[in-house]
Image 1 (tube, rainbow, N blue to C red):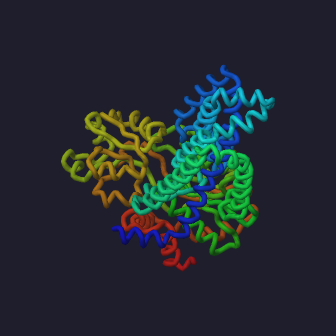
Image 2 (cartoon, rainbow, N blue to C red):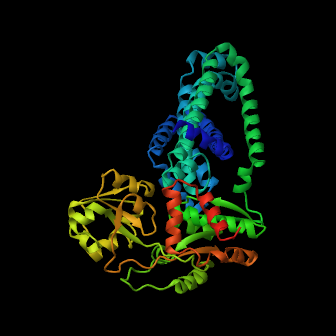
Image 3 (tube, one colour):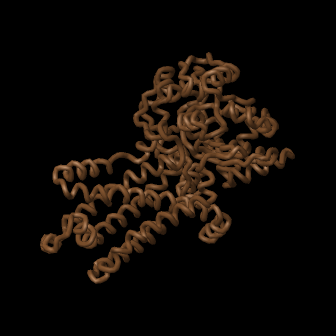
Length: 517
């Protein structure tokens, strides 16, 4: 297993280098921005005791706000990618630097203050030549804490397409690939340790009072040089070329956070790259339809695969009418008139929703439909993604249509659903009908005998302005229309989820099989 991981590491060396640089860039800039805010604020509140108490209390409370929740709140205002990530990371890094700056300044011996006053120092001179040099070890300690914390939190950047080592972790969870998870967690842990150790050595050096006399005047120059260097390196990096405004020869393709979405996005990306002069920026693993829809409207995403039933219920907010749903033509008409977004032709399959149980459970209790399961539900535990409890085509709809009253509902990441039922921790899970893991986990997907769910036809959605500017996109994607039958998409999902192949390789093999590349 260890040799296999190192072989995998060699294959992913370039990606690891890029993701590590993205991670360092996000964390480093956040700490710099936080220091620029927290240190002056720490100086200010030291002068006013009433402001000090209020500010530190609010800062302490701010640390209890969930980072993902804060990130989600920012998306409608500042969009996806780097900007909201930097705001969130800076927000969390401010308090430890602020508190330690305040602590260090308050700990300056009164005798030193009196000596400075006796020498006729102005307030600014006293701050610059006496208080800050003496408080510097404490300030550096705050930066050390903030840096280690920020390196860990930066993994959330993966959820909104800002990159970093979190991309490996989220993809590894979605694809059930331990090597990818390790590829994200180990470098992040090493990075945090190395930075913490380096800053701790600097902190110890500053305990030497003789060194402080010569060191502190250089701190301002070092900080300035560091900021300028990071910005210069960032501006020249491939990473920033992706986060800066797109050029006309680029298109951004996004996906949600599960196998089939990765695959569909990769199929489209490879076709566009092969059959047009456009370069593709991939922003996979963006989470729910609401996140990607907002990104489309803001122009941060150009194209992604979606399902008609999900759009009908989650975006258009139409009621859940048993068996009575508009087709893709009606959804297409509303999307174009309301959002200036175009639904292209369907891929050829429908990925519906249902619940699944172990085959032995189905046989033992004669459970083959959702109505059969509803009779036993009060004694069962179900594992679902978080949105299952809120979407009307999930638990609320199931409860109304079938009368489900589960004993316990456990919310977990979609990538962990099959692990939960395989380990017999739960009795039921929510699934998609094209999931490859259904067969591997020996599960039975239950019939929706009351026709609760709409038809979930998969098709690309593209911004109208993008297709108008680049009509070659339609020609590039047209071979996919109708090509992905139910059996074919299930086979491709199987290669990724069960055989452990990457979405890129599976997409490439499939396109070559049909002579499309």
